Image (cartoon, rainbow, N blue to C red; front, side, top):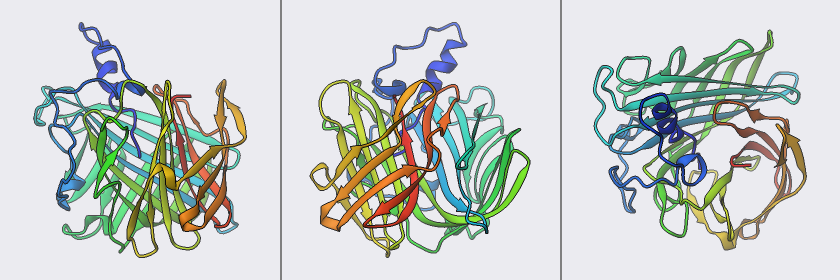
Length: 357
């Protein structure tokens, strides 16, 4: 459910101007009213490859990749690459400095002992960052996510790269599997009040390539997951953060879960069960038992880095543990994100994101 941090860019941008930023509501300002922007409504018909590109009129959007990787010795790693688009106005993109768009990039690598994260900012309209559809290419500075495949199926074969002073990676992502529409045919609700995003995923990528951490180089491979979401107001003002899970089961099935936490009241909990053929079943709160277990102190915060997950209707009863409990994204907008291991009724691996702690 990668409801991320791009909306904060509006406040960050305005704070550097003569105007005063609007008061944030909900985590990262994502509960702020957005009446001027396009609303998210049910029964949208998705169109590919067009929907791989930006969506004018919506306030926030992201292209989000996580990969669970191993080298030939079996050492485990995680890699994250994210590009966020934040619109300052509900108007189409234009060339030049009059562009209404701010871009933000996040990249990270994780091992059992090390976690490094970096960020990039860019203004739209000047070529420093953006997303094109034909051919598909998402970039910010020299970080890139671009297609090596035909225009009609650009996500079949992609190259992913990022670098910073302490890490770099170059990965090839391939898949012949269908895309997955999350929620109700791509309408992903975030609250009982109806806040929502449009949301689809490619959870069947296989990744391979090179990873460098602190001067050491590794040949790595493993499963990867792409999330695509866009919205205008995905949260309520009462929602303080979320816990999001993307899980690759050894059985070939995939699971996406998230719970939206509130200042008061029970969390909003939902998810998707994805079978090995890519068929989906929406999971509701009554289908899921999600309980935080052990915590760790990370960046001065108590973080639940061990969780129990049960989906009785699917005979799933697992415990997930963080590969590295200290996977704190100590960026301008901080949060926790890192790879996890699965044990219990199903083995596997995945990613966990936690915000608002």
